[in-house]
Length: 507
Ligand code: NAD
Image (cartoon, rainbow, N blue to C red; front, top):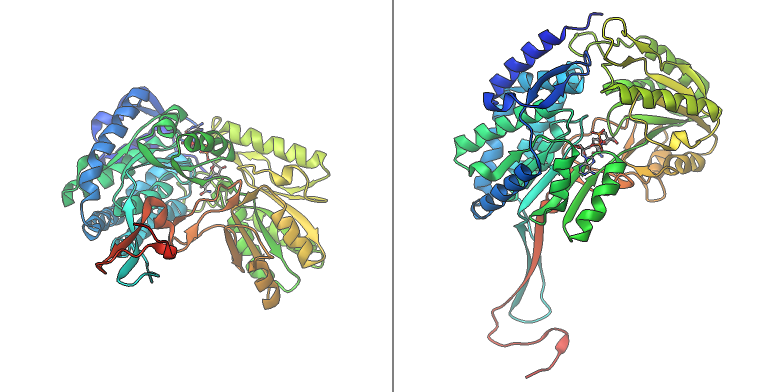
C-alpha cells in the first residue's frame, strides 16, 4: 500500500476547496491545517481571535430578527437548496474530509450523505414545528403552545464527524429560525470552510440574510468565547467528556441552554442464540471502522460463555483481513489515527489492559511507519479481559475492542450499564424475549439501543444522543428540533368574562 505525498494531498484539497467556493482570502494565514494521511502540515488559513469571534456573534445576533420573522416554510427553502449543493459537491467535500479526518472514501461520502439527509428532514420539519392545543378548564378559553426561535446557536464540533454534526445542528437551527456560529475542531478547519461555503452559496441564491451563519477558525479558545457569551442562546457542544465538564457549568452559570454530545463506551451483548455471521460483521464494522474513532464505535463485546471462544476466533480472523492504509486507496478499510497523541493513548490503554489481566489477542501494532513517519496507522486490537476493569470503563478513542464473558442475561445487561458513558449499545440474539428485555426500561441504559445491528451508523430519522457522561443531548430526527426553540404556553380568552383558574375569586 502506498501513502500519497503531502503535495498530492494539498493539490486535491485545494481543488476541492475551490469547487466548494471557499474564497481565496480565507486560504492564507497562520492557522495550520494538517493531514493524518502523512502527518504533515497542509497550509495555513486565516484564524480567528477572541475579538473576531465576539464580532461574529454580534453579526449573527443582528441577523436574527430578520430570519426569525421569515416564515418557517420559506426558511425551509434554504436547507432545500443547501441539500442540492451538498449533493452536487458530495465528492469534493468528502475528499476534504478524507484528507483532514482520515476517513476512508466510502465513510467520508457517507458523512456527506448524512448532511443531505438532514437537509431533507429539516425541509419537511419547516412545515411541522407543531405546538399542541389543550382543553382549557374555563369556558370560552383556548390553551395552546407555540414554538419560537431562540436567537444565536453556537456549535462546537469534534474532529471525527467534522461536517455532519454541524449540519445536524445547523439544518434544524435554521429552519427553527435561529442564526448560527460554528467553532469546528482545530483539526478539521478546511472541511469546515468548505462545508460553510456551500451553505453560503445557498444563502445567497435564496436571498436569505448573509450573516445568519458563520464559521470561526480557532483552537478551543474560540469555543470558550461561545461558551461565555450571553448572546449565544443555545450552545451545542460535541466532543470529549472532558470538554463537556469544562463548558457545561459555564453555560449553566449564565442560564444559557446547552446540548451536549460527548463520549461513548459502547457495548454489544452476544447471546447464545445469536447469528454469529451477522454478529461478526456488525462487530467488525463498529469496532474497527473509522479506525475506532466514532463516538458510537464498539469498544466492548459482552459474549455468552458458550459462544465467546468461537466469536473471538472469528473476530480475530476477520481483523486479519482488514486492509490498513491510506484512506484514499479504494481497498483500504482502516485509515490512520488522527495524530500521535491518539496512538500513544492507545498504547497506554493496551499496557494498562495487560496490567489489569487482559490478553491482547491481535493488533495494536503500528504499521506503515517507514512510508509515513509522521502518520499513525495501527492494527485494530482485540483484547480478552477477565472482567470489566478500570481501563474497559474508559473511552479510548482508538480501535481497541475488549471481550468479556457472561453467563446470565441480567449479568450482561449489568455490565453494559456499568460504565459512566451512555451513548449506544446492541444485542445480537434470536430470542425475542431477550431482545425485548434489553430494550425495556430494565435493559440497556443508553440513548441508542439496537438489536442485531452494531452500535454505530445511526440514521438521521431517529434522535441521536446518550445519557450519563454522554451528556443527555438529542440531535437529528424525532423531536430533536424542539431543542432549538422555546415553547410558550398561551391562554386565549374569547368568553367576554374573566373566570380565574382553579375557581379563584378576586375583584
Ligand atoms: P475534544 O473534546 O478534544 O474537542 C471537541 C471540540 O471542543 C473542539 O472543537 C475543541 O476545540 C473544543 N473544545 C475543547 N475544550 C474546550 C473548552 N474548554 N471550551 C470550549 N471548547 C472546547 O474532542 P475530539 O478529540 O475532537 O473528539 C473526540 C471526542 O468527541 C470523543 O470523546 C468522542 O466520543 C466525542 N464525540 C461525541 C459525539 C456524540 O455525538 N456524542 C460525536 C463525535 C465525537
